[in-house]
Length: 92
Image (cartoon, rainbow, N blue to C red; front, top):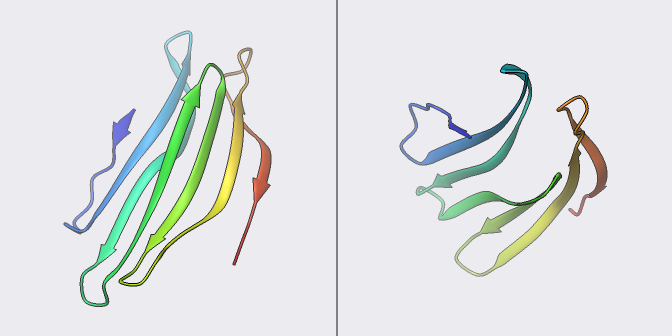
């Protein structure tokens, strides 16, 4: 995992990187957080990693509610090390 650098103090990004034979093969943003204090809105992408499966889910936080959407499931191919999208549900 690698934390991304940003000039915005209200955001953060963490990247999951796969390696095979000590070579970088693929990467995916598994966590990100963005906060806009001017309009009281924040978004966050959370992840769950188990064996060769990765799930991500976006949350939107405002003063009145928390909403979850854009759920994705990835499989990490053990032969290639690539992240492969298995399923995705988009909500608006």
